[in-house]
Length: 249
Image 1: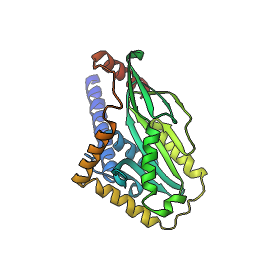
Image 2: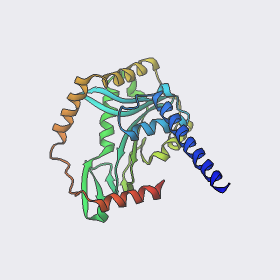
Image 3: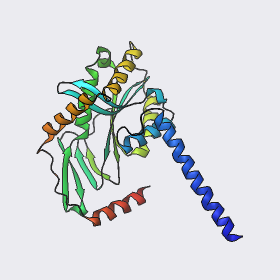
Image 4: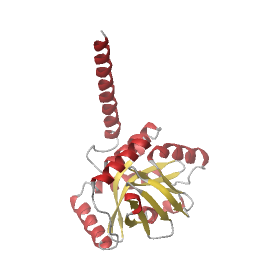
Protein backbone atom coordinates (compact mmCIF):
# COMPACT_ATOMS: atom_id res chain seq x y z
CA UNK A 1 0.00 0.00 0.00
CA UNK A 2 2.82 2.38 0.88
CA UNK A 3 4.48 1.89 -2.50
CA UNK A 4 1.20 2.53 -4.31
CA UNK A 5 0.77 5.84 -2.47
CA UNK A 6 4.33 6.89 -3.31
CA UNK A 7 3.86 5.97 -6.98
CA UNK A 8 0.58 7.89 -7.02
CA UNK A 9 2.24 10.97 -5.56
CA UNK A 10 5.09 10.79 -8.07
CA UNK A 11 2.67 10.42 -11.00
CA UNK A 12 0.57 13.33 -9.71
CA UNK A 13 3.68 15.49 -9.37
CA UNK A 14 4.83 14.66 -12.91
CA UNK A 15 1.37 15.42 -14.31
CA UNK A 16 1.28 18.71 -12.41
CA UNK A 17 4.70 19.73 -13.73
CA UNK A 18 3.74 18.81 -17.30
CA UNK A 19 0.49 20.76 -17.01
CA UNK A 20 2.32 23.76 -15.59
CA UNK A 21 4.85 23.66 -18.45
CA UNK A 22 1.99 23.38 -20.96
CA UNK A 23 0.24 26.43 -19.46
CA UNK A 24 3.47 28.43 -19.51
CA UNK A 25 4.10 27.60 -23.17
CA UNK A 26 0.52 28.51 -24.01
CA UNK A 27 0.85 31.92 -22.31
CA UNK A 28 4.16 32.65 -24.08
CA UNK A 29 2.68 31.55 -27.42
CA UNK A 30 -0.07 34.17 -27.00
CA UNK A 31 2.68 36.81 -27.36
CA UNK A 32 5.48 35.35 -29.48
CA UNK A 33 6.78 32.26 -31.21
CA UNK A 34 8.15 29.62 -28.85
CA UNK A 35 11.42 29.49 -30.81
CA UNK A 36 11.96 33.25 -31.08
CA UNK A 37 14.53 35.04 -28.96
CA UNK A 38 16.21 33.66 -25.85
CA UNK A 39 14.61 31.47 -23.21
CA UNK A 40 15.11 34.21 -20.60
CA UNK A 41 13.17 36.67 -22.79
CA UNK A 42 10.29 34.21 -23.11
CA UNK A 43 10.33 33.63 -19.36
CA UNK A 44 10.03 37.39 -18.81
CA UNK A 45 7.01 37.44 -21.13
CA UNK A 46 5.44 34.74 -18.97
CA UNK A 47 6.10 36.72 -15.79
CA UNK A 48 4.59 39.89 -17.24
CA UNK A 49 1.42 38.16 -18.43
CA UNK A 50 1.05 36.42 -15.06
CA UNK A 51 1.41 39.84 -13.40
CA UNK A 52 -1.59 41.12 -15.36
CA UNK A 53 0.04 42.80 -18.37
CA UNK A 54 -2.21 42.08 -21.41
CA UNK A 55 -0.52 39.79 -23.93
CA UNK A 56 -1.61 42.11 -26.74
CA UNK A 57 0.55 44.91 -25.30
CA UNK A 58 3.79 42.90 -25.06
CA UNK A 59 6.05 43.19 -28.11
CA UNK A 60 9.00 40.81 -28.34
CA UNK A 61 12.19 40.87 -30.40
CA UNK A 62 11.74 44.13 -32.26
CA UNK A 63 14.01 45.62 -34.92
CA UNK A 64 13.71 49.41 -34.91
CA UNK A 65 15.45 51.61 -37.53
CA UNK A 66 18.49 53.62 -36.38
CA UNK A 67 21.60 55.22 -37.86
CA UNK A 68 23.28 51.82 -38.30
CA UNK A 69 20.28 50.18 -39.98
CA UNK A 70 18.28 48.62 -37.16
CA UNK A 71 18.64 48.09 -33.43
CA UNK A 72 17.21 45.01 -31.74
CA UNK A 73 15.05 45.40 -28.61
CA UNK A 74 14.16 42.43 -26.43
CA UNK A 75 10.77 43.58 -25.12
CA UNK A 76 8.60 46.69 -25.28
CA UNK A 77 5.41 47.17 -23.26
CA UNK A 78 3.31 50.31 -23.83
CA UNK A 79 1.04 51.25 -20.92
CA UNK A 80 -1.19 54.19 -20.04
CA UNK A 81 1.63 55.80 -18.01
CA UNK A 82 4.39 55.32 -20.58
CA UNK A 83 6.48 52.72 -22.36
CA UNK A 84 8.62 50.02 -20.74
CA UNK A 85 11.70 48.97 -22.70
CA UNK A 86 13.41 45.79 -21.49
CA UNK A 87 16.98 44.67 -22.04
CA UNK A 88 17.50 41.06 -20.90
CA UNK A 89 20.92 39.75 -19.85
CA UNK A 90 21.91 36.24 -18.85
CA UNK A 91 25.11 36.01 -16.78
CA UNK A 92 26.78 34.06 -14.02
CA UNK A 93 29.28 35.42 -11.50
CA UNK A 94 29.40 38.88 -9.95
CA UNK A 95 28.36 41.97 -11.89
CA UNK A 96 29.90 45.40 -11.25
CA UNK A 97 28.90 48.52 -13.12
CA UNK A 98 28.56 52.28 -13.17
CA UNK A 99 25.82 53.81 -15.30
CA UNK A 100 28.30 56.42 -16.56
CA UNK A 101 30.96 53.91 -17.63
CA UNK A 102 30.95 52.28 -21.07
CA UNK A 103 32.20 48.98 -19.70
CA UNK A 104 30.79 46.79 -16.95
CA UNK A 105 32.57 43.85 -15.38
CA UNK A 106 31.64 40.22 -14.90
CA UNK A 107 33.82 38.46 -12.33
CA UNK A 108 34.09 34.67 -12.35
CA UNK A 109 36.07 31.91 -10.66
CA UNK A 110 36.12 33.78 -7.33
CA UNK A 111 37.77 36.83 -8.85
CA UNK A 112 40.37 35.02 -10.96
CA UNK A 113 38.65 35.65 -14.29
CA UNK A 114 37.05 38.85 -15.57
CA UNK A 115 34.99 39.78 -18.57
CA UNK A 116 34.09 43.27 -19.78
CA UNK A 117 30.78 43.89 -21.51
CA UNK A 118 29.04 46.96 -22.84
CA UNK A 119 27.06 48.96 -20.29
CA UNK A 120 23.48 47.60 -20.67
CA UNK A 121 22.01 50.91 -19.48
CA UNK A 122 23.75 52.73 -22.33
CA UNK A 123 22.74 49.91 -24.66
CA UNK A 124 19.09 50.32 -23.72
CA UNK A 125 19.41 54.10 -23.96
CA UNK A 126 20.31 53.52 -27.62
CA UNK A 127 17.20 51.40 -28.04
CA UNK A 128 15.07 54.08 -26.43
CA UNK A 129 16.59 56.81 -28.61
CA UNK A 130 15.78 54.80 -31.75
CA UNK A 131 12.25 54.24 -30.51
CA UNK A 132 11.74 57.96 -29.78
CA UNK A 133 12.93 58.81 -33.28
CA UNK A 134 10.12 56.79 -34.87
CA UNK A 135 7.44 59.32 -33.93
CA UNK A 136 7.32 62.86 -32.54
CA UNK A 137 4.76 61.95 -29.89
CA UNK A 138 7.28 59.73 -28.07
CA UNK A 139 9.33 62.84 -27.29
CA UNK A 140 6.87 63.64 -24.48
CA UNK A 141 6.03 60.10 -23.37
CA UNK A 142 7.87 58.69 -20.32
CA UNK A 143 9.97 55.66 -21.21
CA UNK A 144 11.15 53.34 -18.47
CA UNK A 145 14.39 51.43 -19.01
CA UNK A 146 14.34 47.97 -17.41
CA UNK A 147 17.61 46.00 -17.35
CA UNK A 148 16.84 42.44 -16.26
CA UNK A 149 19.64 40.08 -15.23
CA UNK A 150 18.90 36.36 -15.52
CA UNK A 151 21.23 33.49 -14.67
CA UNK A 152 23.07 32.85 -11.43
CA UNK A 153 24.72 36.27 -11.38
CA UNK A 154 24.81 38.64 -8.42
CA UNK A 155 24.57 42.41 -8.85
CA UNK A 156 27.33 43.46 -6.47
CA UNK A 157 27.82 47.18 -7.09
CA UNK A 158 25.65 48.96 -9.66
CA UNK A 159 25.95 52.72 -9.17
CA UNK A 160 24.61 56.04 -10.51
CA UNK A 161 21.45 54.54 -11.94
CA UNK A 162 19.49 57.37 -13.62
CA UNK A 163 15.83 58.25 -13.15
CA UNK A 164 13.31 55.93 -14.81
CA UNK A 165 15.95 53.21 -15.09
CA UNK A 166 15.91 49.96 -13.13
CA UNK A 167 18.49 47.16 -12.89
CA UNK A 168 16.74 44.13 -11.45
CA UNK A 169 16.42 40.36 -11.20
CA UNK A 170 13.51 38.76 -13.14
CA UNK A 171 11.47 37.89 -10.07
CA UNK A 172 11.39 41.61 -9.13
CA UNK A 173 10.10 42.83 -12.49
CA UNK A 174 6.32 42.39 -11.85
CA UNK A 175 6.53 44.31 -8.57
CA UNK A 176 8.53 47.18 -10.11
CA UNK A 177 6.19 47.45 -13.09
CA UNK A 178 3.07 47.39 -10.90
CA UNK A 179 4.47 50.05 -8.55
CA UNK A 180 5.43 52.33 -11.44
CA UNK A 181 1.99 51.97 -13.08
CA UNK A 182 0.18 52.63 -9.80
CA UNK A 183 2.19 55.74 -8.87
CA UNK A 184 2.76 57.47 -12.22
CA UNK A 185 0.41 59.89 -14.01
CA UNK A 186 -1.19 59.03 -17.36
CA UNK A 187 1.11 59.69 -20.32
CA UNK A 188 0.12 62.41 -22.84
CA UNK A 189 -0.41 60.15 -25.86
CA UNK A 190 -1.81 61.79 -28.99
CA UNK A 191 -2.29 58.57 -30.94
CA UNK A 192 -1.87 55.27 -29.09
CA UNK A 193 -2.60 53.29 -32.24
CA UNK A 194 0.41 54.85 -33.96
CA UNK A 195 2.62 53.53 -31.15
CA UNK A 196 1.10 50.07 -31.52
CA UNK A 197 1.64 50.11 -35.29
CA UNK A 198 5.30 51.09 -34.86
CA UNK A 199 5.90 48.31 -32.34
CA UNK A 200 4.08 45.75 -34.47
CA UNK A 201 6.21 46.74 -37.46
CA UNK A 202 9.33 46.33 -35.28
CA UNK A 203 8.28 42.75 -34.52
CA UNK A 204 7.57 42.09 -38.19
CA UNK A 205 11.05 43.37 -39.08
CA UNK A 206 12.39 40.50 -37.01
CA UNK A 207 10.88 38.11 -39.54
CA UNK A 208 12.92 39.73 -42.30
CA UNK A 209 16.08 37.67 -42.71
CA UNK A 210 17.92 40.51 -44.43
CA UNK A 211 17.23 42.95 -41.60
CA UNK A 212 18.33 40.43 -38.96
CA UNK A 213 21.55 39.48 -40.78
CA UNK A 214 22.51 43.11 -41.40
CA UNK A 215 21.95 43.88 -37.72
CA UNK A 216 24.12 40.95 -36.61
CA UNK A 217 26.93 42.02 -38.93
CA UNK A 218 26.80 45.60 -37.63
CA UNK A 219 26.93 44.41 -34.03
CA UNK A 220 29.98 42.25 -34.78
CA UNK A 221 31.74 45.14 -36.52
CA UNK A 222 31.04 47.60 -33.70
CA UNK A 223 31.99 45.24 -30.86
CA UNK A 224 34.93 43.42 -32.46
CA UNK A 225 37.99 43.58 -30.21
CA UNK A 226 36.36 45.85 -27.63
CA UNK A 227 35.04 43.44 -25.05
CA UNK A 228 37.16 40.38 -24.49
CA UNK A 229 36.78 37.70 -21.90
CA UNK A 230 39.69 36.43 -19.84
CA UNK A 231 37.53 33.56 -18.68
CA UNK A 232 38.67 30.00 -19.40
CA UNK A 233 36.05 27.27 -19.60
CA UNK A 234 36.22 24.73 -16.81
CA UNK A 235 33.84 22.40 -15.02
CA UNK A 236 34.53 23.85 -11.55
CA UNK A 237 32.85 27.11 -12.55
CA UNK A 238 29.91 25.24 -14.06
CA UNK A 239 29.33 23.45 -10.74
CA UNK A 240 29.70 26.74 -8.86
CA UNK A 241 27.14 28.36 -11.20
CA UNK A 242 24.65 25.52 -10.67
CA UNK A 243 25.07 25.78 -6.90
CA UNK A 244 24.33 29.51 -7.00
CA UNK A 245 21.28 28.91 -9.18
CA UNK A 246 19.84 26.34 -6.75
CA UNK A 247 20.49 28.70 -3.84
CA UNK A 248 18.70 31.56 -5.57
CA UNK A 249 15.58 29.74 -6.72
